[in-house]
Length: 89
Image 1: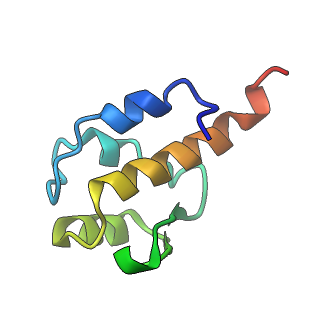
Image 2: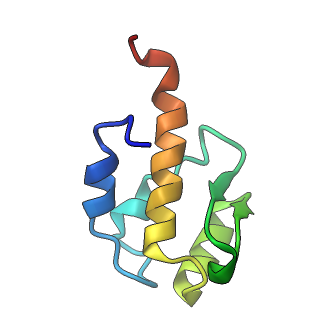
């Protein structure tokens, strides 16, 4: 689903694996909007996971458990939810 024009921008965003400091994808994590950050991924890649704190996200990202592509997909899904009420038909 490519509803948000920014989807392609997020997909192309600089998001170095296992690097937290200065990583723009981590700087825009949407936990302030929601009480959780959900990542949907195939079972062979660890299955879906819900994070409840920024520290949990950072720990998994630094260890490599959370892949940059999965982080970006979760970020895109969350931003789409935030922007849904302001979209025009």
